[in-house]
Length: 487
Image (tube, rainbow, N blue to C red; front, side, top):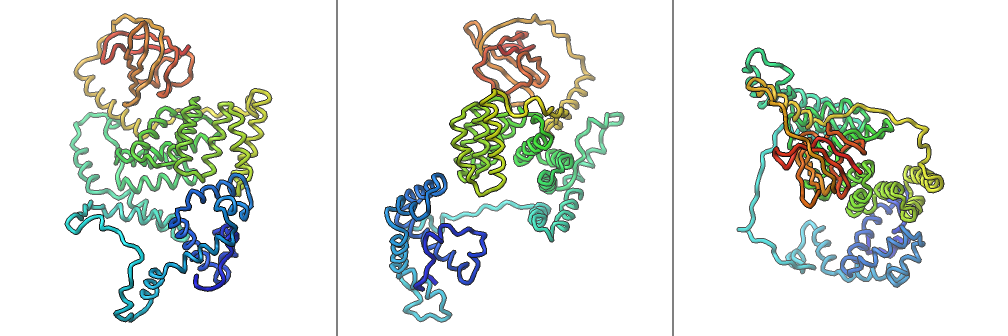
């Protein structure tokens, strides 16, 4: 096909949309792919990717016409660039010979082994190869197949039936657990027994995500709880839980519930999967709501670095700029997003521009004070529920032995600087406070119930803040925190 005289002109090729009807007319469909392939082959072989980056900047950011952008980026007209690509294509004689021989049903001995167009060193030898295998449960295979099915409209019902069957069918581990559960001592509180979740943890997780996507948040929370009870090590559950908290808050125009735990979950997810742009984006939104705009910018820029063409990430960065009153930086992004081909991005940008102008002029966000925020009950994480159940069981066992002695330690007072907060084992938190020339490690058993002055919610991202603390000396650290005041 590329050997024909007629090619798509490069300006037409570069502007042709992937889903347009013109691309599918006649031979355009196959010619589009063939010509796109050889153009990329040429750019890679001739090391013209930096010029290609300049071309995208001119077209996408500066809105320069395609013909002029080709001239500025590649230093030649589109006609000359097209001719250079054609000359490069015709110079690949060895490649063309190999392709032609591959298409012959009975090639002769002379043409069956054409000269190789490229030669590479063998990276490893036969003795260096090794394959490691890990058994994959049949239930998980069926769950993954059903996950694909529910994304296809005509197969969705069958896929959902399979997932529900997998989520409710007892596994071998469930039956073993049930036999142990029946051996519990008589008279025990059934509420303190372990969860009765059964079935495939993967099926529960897939159902949870499907419920989130369809706005069925209560059902999603139930499935996440069951999945977490069956497999606490599944990091996807922590990400799904963070998405659930964000979607619930967004649907009710309310604050995100459990914000500190959400940020901890997202940090754990990013340690496990550092290239997950969506997790960085969600972490940026959480930090921005928590008031930490510098760290929110850092997280959002990381998301954009991993997925530079995602306009929603750019919109979120513009939101963070507006929240931190960086008007010039936000205006640059908003001007770029106004020209988006995505109607949703254009509509969101228009609203954000209006809010930014109002806040810049009057000092308050548009509509502030006119729309009451919904007050939601604190949403517990499935992991929090599991930890609370474990704590209840431990407390029930220790209560039979002895009651906790009354704490008779004297309460001390100190003013200083909060250096950092460590929440590596929530809800326990350890605060490092510099006071009176020494470092104090102050521990709180549950930062969610800590008495706070000057702040509504505790944040694990606090650092370099002037604080006043009341604490009882001794214990696992330098002292147990009684109250914390932010000054």
